[in-house]
Length: 468
Ligand SMILES: Cc1ncc(COP(=O)(O)O)c(C=O)c1O
Image 1 (cartoon, rainbow, N blue to C red):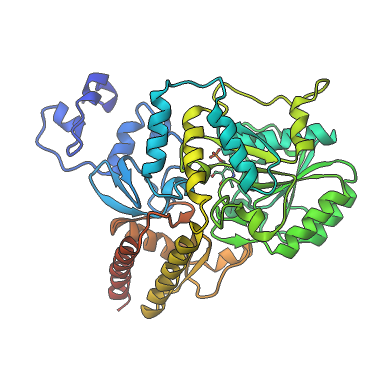
Image 2 (cartoon, rainbow, N blue to C red; image 1 turned 60 degrees about the horizontal axis):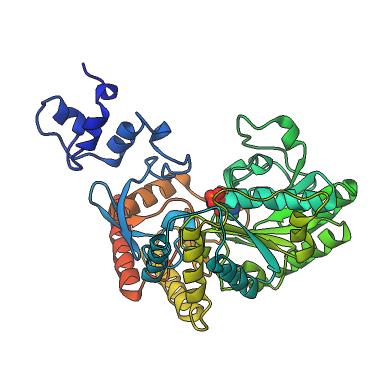
């Protein structure tokens, strides 16, 4: 029997999207249309696991998405199926897919020559715009991804303080760098921690040396008392406190401004650098990001995703004193790379900030999103379906199996995971795409949102029939 592996590269080039290329190639009868699972099996011959990122297998169906194209609020998969997209590339597509202003800016940039490794007037222009909009940003550096950003932010904090340890929050995601891999999702929190001690490492990743973990102290979120105790115990050793002011990675968990102010005061008292990871939450509540929304300015922050509407680029921004450690003539923090400040990302960032920096951009957008969230909750209530919609700004979550809001990681135990999986799998079947974090984009116009509600209604009707 010829195995898929015997199909040469030429065979792949001839792939017919509607049929199974393996069976056709072997001269067999016309096959049934390929499913996404078939695509994963085929892709796995060459691409490890059939995906470019291990976060791509859908958390509800287990299968990755293979796209052909995406426009506005919609995305199409290789089987030809169309979806209203609420996943939006891990929350990066705040303006909608293929936003014309961003596309034009990227095309114009590419027409001037496709290059990295140098800066341009556009680079300086984008840096200026970020400094004007984001409170923490006195100066900035461009990096390529959120992971690279959190890595540089920690290095800067260590560089300016001369200390090694880092304090992070149980359950907060900061990309895939070694220092912050353990305890980086709600599924990996130290659930046994009653809140009176640092959390134990959970969900470590093979390949990360133990010695790295020893430099990271993890505390439960929203517990300023414990944070204070740990800072006192570790006196003079903590370089940085890093956290997500809004945790959209695990749903919608929102810090209180009082807590953030307290953390800021404690960081100052103990000489630690306060870092807000705004890679996911940045620009979701307004142009000044979560820090502007809460009125708490960190020493450093990391931006990405929505900054460029999904074109690769990220930013580390912060106080001049800290950022200038990069330029220390005697003992600099080294920061740089071939693609840092790549021109396509810069072009996209300029177009995005021109749009979202306009007065009047957010108000109608976020009002529309809020209306949709309330209508969705009403729909759940009308069907007596146990689900609660939680939101802040453009980010939202649907917790299934409970009617009460969930405000901390322990509360996640109230979800009904089996019902959650069935509900979202059915949403995906009905053309509503969900995966990790959920976002409504600017391109989700009233017509699209009404259509989404109709699709939700169809999903819920099925559940009602099942219940009856
Ligand atoms: C809060 C947060 N920080 C950092 C990252 C890492 O960003 P990237 O995927 O660009 O490396 C992510 C990605 O999802 C994120 O949500």
